[in-house]
Length: 205
Image 1: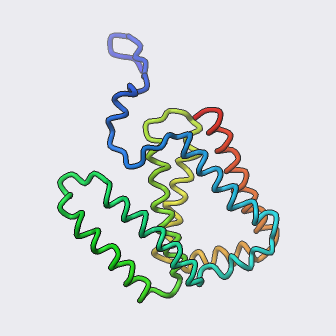
Image 2: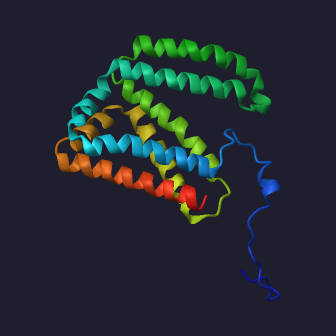
Image 3: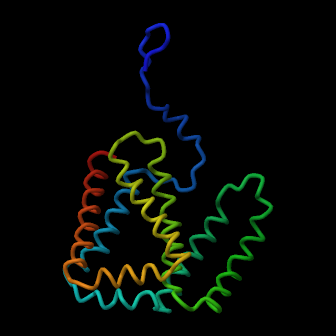
């Protein structure tokens, strides 16, 4: 970029000490987040790629009450920890009421939201998981950071749909499990994506 007087202005990355003062929730480096995300993608995709008969388990997931309770409990613990530790500033007065309301809401959801509970809970978990990915990639200038950022936005997009329209995941699973080729292709893509993130996490982040 040229200034009016003809001087060349060079854009430099922000000072690390200045970046450190930005408010963050999760104090995780991009490398740590990349390793965690890559390992999880590999662990989730590899069994499905090697054992196509696991498609039957996936088809039962949307209406699995046990899976719903398990995932929703993880969301409860995660959200409770966030409310208890996050800096709320001028909204700090709402911390205690929210900490009280959260377990009550958890119980009401278990009592009255029985249909597609697992899908809705998975959607909430995806929304929670997206934030640390974006947090770690914030103000990083490596082009490879986009692997983590894209994954975060995919989690957000999927999470919003699965919470609001849970039968979408059921239809997605039905379409994917209709043929072994589709099932293996999906898991192969996820496996490759996870391996690529791991490679960059160990070499560039």
